[in-house]
Length: 343
Image (cartoon, rainbow, N blue to C red; front, side):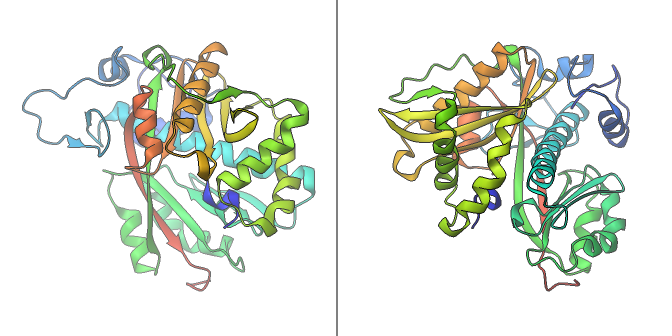
């Protein structure tokens, strides 16, 4: 599998009404940062969204691996989870636009809004074939979505709204032959509430020097277990990422040997942990934890006020992020459309 196939916004009004209104406000905002409103302060407080639910509440459900309980339909958490989804969509869109423009992939890369959803397509890299849908309206646009991916050998993945919404997308996808996909957990922490992590480690974390950029990319590809025959194409595309001011790069070293990599996406005063991975021989030794902590410190030093991330539920990445002070604020179920299904 190609490395890209394996991978890892918000100026809000002081009051947010419905979830759809929250998303509309989010997408129309010029930036992706700013104030935490009163409702979110009540929900998250200063402990990083770690308040226990009120006694007697029966609709709260435990998020597996989280250090707290959350309500999937709680407006502050729903808004935070949607913000995380929106940031991931922006990060993937930025990479695709960069590859398309710098490597002249206009005939193989497409990005399109489909209603409130964002659809991405890269005929060379199946990871990017995703539809990020913040609400249930994509259920009524499935024929249009299927047409968008017609002729692509990879099919696509629809990453739907936060769990706890109406389930319209799930019913529509089943009716049209889509298959259940993976689940995604969305994480968040206001920056003052993140843990001051300085884990004891044998790894040194620092940005790659100019002459180490090739080593960074090769470590990235190896850590994500890319197929060696795809290295050349991936390197041609990914080398252009170093020129994007929205991205920061960190590399973990064990002595003189590269051990892992981590990237940070910044949008205004909001940061997203992305593309963190460790080489197989250095896993379970604290390298990923050190990379998470280093990226959080970097975001804080650059003036970011909060940080978001995504992870596979119950995975080691989610556990490491919880230790660093992030909290799971929602989860999303995805749906897969195989290339030979209704295409």
